[in-house]
Amino acid sequence: MKFEDFGLSTAIMQAIATKGYVTPTPIQSQAIPVAIRGEDLLGSAETGSGKTAAFAIPVLHNLTEKGNPAKGQGRRIRALVIAPTRELSSQILDSFYAYGANTPLKFAAIYGGVPQSGQERALRNGADVVIATPGRLMDLINQRIVDLGHIEILVLDEADRMLDMGFLPDIRKIMSYIPKARQTLFFSATMPRNVQVLADTLLNNPARINVEQPKGTADRIEQSVFMVSQKDKGSFLVSYLGSESFNSAIVFTRTRHGADKVVMRLRRAKIYAEAIHGDKSQSARQRTLDGFRNRQVNVLVATDIAARGIDVDHITHVVNFDLPREADTYVHRIGRTARAGAKGKAVSFCDSSERSLLRAIEKMVNKKLPVVQPKFEFVPEAAPEKSEAPMRSEPYRKVTPSRQVAAPRSSGSSGSAPGDYPRRGSKNKSQKTKYNKFKSSGGGGGNGGGHRSSGD
Image 1: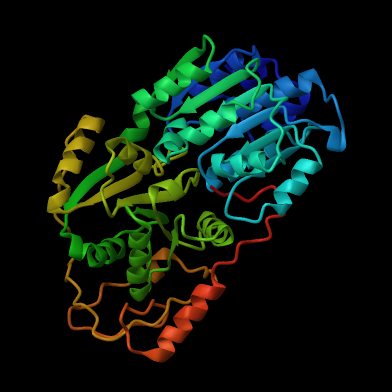
Image 2 (image 1 turned 90 degrees about the horizontal axis):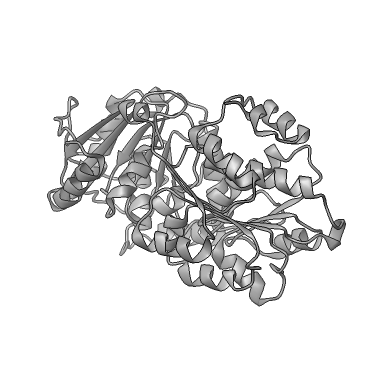
């Protein structure tokens, strides 16, 4: 099957050809015909399977076929896409712009993390399709800025993640503002019971599509485990990255604070890393993502929620610095590598307290993950004796990963390099002053005026 077999409009086919698409992915080949017919759909597919196009293309086709009943500020929101995070919202918005480039339709996104003035302006100017995160959408509904009374198509993307993030009350409230006579497209990477219950309440006799991750993808990922004590993980990560030849690596931590600590440790070893998590301002998150996509940042340290929606083909290594609490999250994490037919590595650092999590992961993937001994020299780092200086914001540097990666410090090193945060309780007044200035100046929220940034 090819895209031309779907009977799409000429405008959409031209945009698809510009993207270089010829053959649809499994989720696209099954979902697009169902959605074009106007049926409800319950789809299960992993991240990276192409499901954004699986709903965006039929939404665009159906809306253009029905025409535009009003122009400018008279336009009504006819399709609503709800997504869990800023980054995923941004990715979805970009897809609508790409596939709908030759249509008269207008698009807007609303999300937290930026001032809402720009989003209000986009809505006043008229939008046929709105991509929204639940929290900001409810804020604008309560302010009577958003009218959902004309919705014809509703899409819920990454439903399992939205429920994990506690958005169920908001989603149920949002549903009360949307007409019952609508088409609903419901997508989730996994189908736990709470997701299935939600789907049953929202969908009307849906077509059910379950697309498993292609077996070849898992085969292309070399998975392994290092048994490492929690206190040694930072130094061990430096040693590991120093021994590997990698293009881009993503390191997953369990907490936001943990992500920042890992970044500081990597920077002390001259490995240029950036963190992305919910405490970062939207503008900072977007800069970091842009740098990572452009290969100016070689190591991205992320929490699971913030990493949702990151779609980068050149990630060669995934490091589970902390094992995830939920076993299915492991599958999402390692799926960030081995994209577009490439090979990848996924390594996990397992402390003795995490053995039960490792067993759950092995049960999920139905295989025993090999525990390997490091082939590199690893020397645990002694605790620094001096106060650490604040971590400076640096411009992205175009340096090859092999030159950026340095061997770990020996255990006898002390002091700290410029660019680190001060330790709590430091008596160095000048460093504390610089740190406070960094905190006050580093959280710019962006202008909020564009349609293309993201937030949760």
